[in-house]
Length: 201
Ligand code: GLN
Image (cartoon, rainbow, N blue to C red):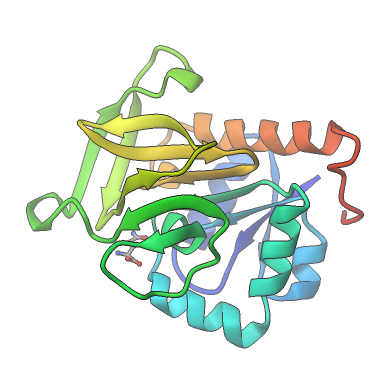
């Protein structure tokens, strides 16, 4: 059961490494054929407008959207959360639109551009998670069916809608592998559900 990391731009190696530390088998995904070989996909941090252009050029938008609709677990971190979102506040920016939220880019402002903040994530247990924010978005609207998993202060920074997970921060940059483990577990569970099984890998 392989977890793919979209490897067009951004923090790819850190996710491959963290997934391996969490006990997953992780591989880079750069093409539609490589996407067919994975059971789940992580979209890392990076620059969302660049990655959307690359996804369009490579022909990966439709295959990713179709796999997610068929139940493939998807996790967007930071830029990945922007790419997954339905809407970007104040911008007519193309996205995959697989997560019914509105994100605001670079929302925490200049003095908070980069920060490590301990946050409560009840789904992971009592111990706070060291969340690394880098020019992070926040989630300012959640549609029905979107579950809020964590906030930083008032602001929503982690959500889940069915098989789609999004974090505004970068779990791959901390030593804590609980969110990577959470995603690997979700991937294993999705493979065990009849009807949600894809033919790939
Ligand atoms: N600011 C970036 C964007 O809007 C995201 C930052 C990140 O992924 N670290 O695309």
